[in-house]
Amino acid sequence: MLNVRQPFVNPELSSPSPVLTDMHVVIIGMGLMGASLGYDLRGHVRRVTGVVRRAEAIPTTRTSGCVDDVTTDAHAAVAEADLVVLATPVRTILRQIAELGPRMKPGAVLIDMGSTKTAICRAMADLPPYVQALGGHPMCGKEAAGLAAAEPGLYRGCTFVLCPLPRTSPQAQNLILSLIHHLQAHPLVLDPEQHDRLVAAISHLPYLTATSLVAHVMAVAEADPRVWEVAASGFRDTSRVAASDVRMMLDILFTNRDAVLNAVDDYLARLAALRQALATGDEHLLKQQLASIAHTRRNWQKNRQTH
Amino acid sequence: MLNVRQPFVNPELSSPSPVLTDMHVVIIGMGLMGASLGYDLRGHVRRVTGVVRRAEAIPTTRTSGCVDDVTTDAHAAVAEADLVVLATPVRTILRQIAELGPRMKPGAVLIDMGSTKTAICRAMADLPPYVQALGGHPMCGKEAAGLAAAEPGLYRGCTFVLCPLPRTSPQAQNLILSLIHHLQAHPLVLDPEQHDRLVAAISHLPYLTATSLVAHVMAVAEADPRVWEVAASGFRDTSRVAASDVRMMLDILFTNRDAVLNAVDDYLARLAALRQALATGDEHLLKQQLASIAHTRRNWQKNRQTH
Image (cartoon, rainbow over all chains, first blue to last red; front, side):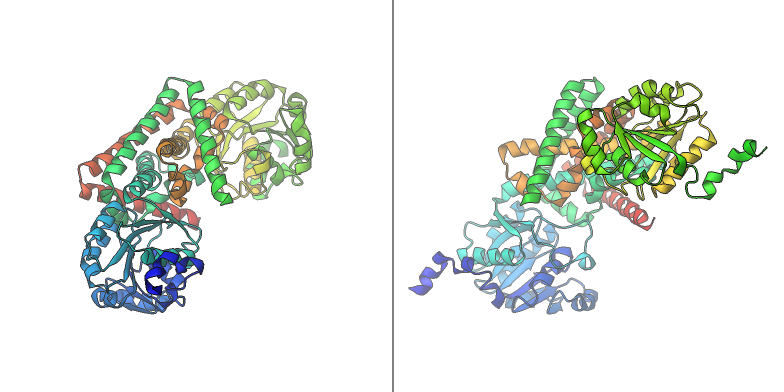
């Protein structure tokens, strides 16, 4: 009877990470996200194995200290894993779910850290029923990519979105909740389509607004390169994400195309409306809108800081 | 003979601030910029007088420590000043140039710190010939406004744009160069129209892109307020300047309207082109453009850090 009841009392939720400590965790992809996760898990789980694509990456990955061992043999590694974390670009994740998922042990858990979730959760739903899979998206990162940019504590304080499949077991979800607890991140369960709509607004659209801004300044610089000298903190922050890894961003844009296009269209209309108010000299309207926007942005920042 | 020659050997350039130390400096406007300037100058010049609009602001300004004395009587203050600094919103500066400039002592120097320069330099050109005036724009700041946000060292490391009039004397220019040297900022002389074109690209356009982004997220939040929870560092940085002081920004937008509208139009076309490449699935084109933009943005950051 005890075994049958276990899932319903959720013992994992009552202590920090009771199951996690026994896990052999295999992280596929030793970039910013994968290696940072390795730093936080190594020594707190049974074993952390890193999987890299190229053999040349093995020595630096090993000496970085973010894994217990490192290999290029993803097939062998996932066959031994209790938990597999896919930390590669989204379209690579899509291929890896189909390629690696079926090679996992029955009951082992598969999660990804990709920035879009609909296509990924669909691919996960096609896996054999003995694989426990769910989509994940830690809302953190920086424009620098790669192992060299990885650091312990990257996930601390961030929102970690979870998209369980209808069939994902409570045990698998609790294991991932323990992982998120260990990382000192905040779990947030979202439906994959909902996730993709929301991140189109606050992440994928900002990438395109930042790149368009840099493209404009590049055009201005052709006539007058001094523009780079006067660019200060406003330009720096507004354009920061334009330096993001292009391959990663292309995967995101193309796996969330409809939501991104909708967001861009709404944004273009809003900017055009502000432009129109300025062009026609409707200062009253412009002031009203800008004041409401400034108020909202300040409140968001304030609420964020108090959390 | 000595007196006649003095301006040509520029003695001010050979020592940090030989003349500045003797100055009675009057700062009009005790907001972020004016009060921060006061902190950096007080004790290093003969006297710093702050001018505030409302009598209620006198006690906090006095106790803040950024001035030697504070008054609401701008007329009396500027009549005694060797250097007057206008640190108010741009359209207030335009009024104050006409109102206060003629009340200054012959040979006293007038500079402003407004974010647009064409209209201001035109207003300065209308002053009586005995006033030495020039436009200034320190390229720093933050979205927080007011005396409470002011701090010593705000100007350190920033580019300080100067727009001398054709009639501005070398002595007046050298006094301001001494001031910039004292603030540990970097002087950059620009023609007012050139300044306004460049800052439209790197400052005024980014303000409108940030506000449009927040406006889009506000619309998304009406249907799903969780969007504020998933918003992370990408949104934070891309939208930061949307929290800027609205009155200050309206003055900037309306005194640089043509350049801002041109910048917005070019930007809208560039974003629409990226959108089109995504919509039609032209990944090759999109990749090429995003890679060039990311490369340029990374180089700018790198060059900035090494300066």
